[in-house]
Length: 350
Image (tube, rainbow, N blue to C red):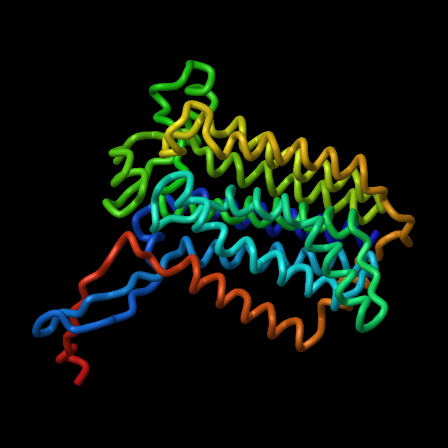
């Protein structure tokens, strides 16, 4: 019963957040969160650094993902120290990979790719988990069963990328094709659910020249599919079916990555089959091999109450807040937009 309550509350929270995001985030108002004055350009004019809602939603999505990861692994009574160490190791690789892979594939130095970072993380995650367990066992006994940890990571990744697409809606990136260029079936299906972006600094407008054009809401479809998959994967995990949870999460996310590319209009590289599609295909095969060669251990049935108990510690809460701030500073500082600020007195209020 506690598992059902947890999954129901999680589903309701996600539905409310996605519904609000789909309605509001395509508007120009929801791209820039704040501006920080950097230096004075002329009398009364300052150069500003834009902080974006893209960064806010990416940071919040990653926070949700890490919280779910900790709850699931805590529910399975897996070492907290081992969990934190493996997560830190994976983040240390994936954060720089988000920019490095974008540079290698798209030849752009001022963008990020969650897909590329995810592919690097999927490849390295099993080895990071096993290395973490062996390293910690030198100092104290630490059990870090590989497949349950990978299953929890896959579920958390799926949730994080699903929610992170709200940031893409806000910035106007990862945008879909023009609805009028699609077949009649797609046109009818998305007739009342298309995205129309406002504002010259939205990527769909400055890169795709798609101002005022109804577009396939590919980001919204990804949000819904990934969030549903994360909830289903969590249900499998909490019932002790770790292999099924792992394969489901990675198979759905990576197969959809391959398929969704055919409905996107943004730049995805220079080849007909994009590098990200190839990464998705390789990731699915890799996940199947891992599930085949790494056996699922016999663990006690996970307890969601135990998972929340492990999460609810002052040190963990402070670390989560710091992680959110790091994510926001990495992804929220816009280098493709700038701002000019001026300040005036409100004479009537003096």
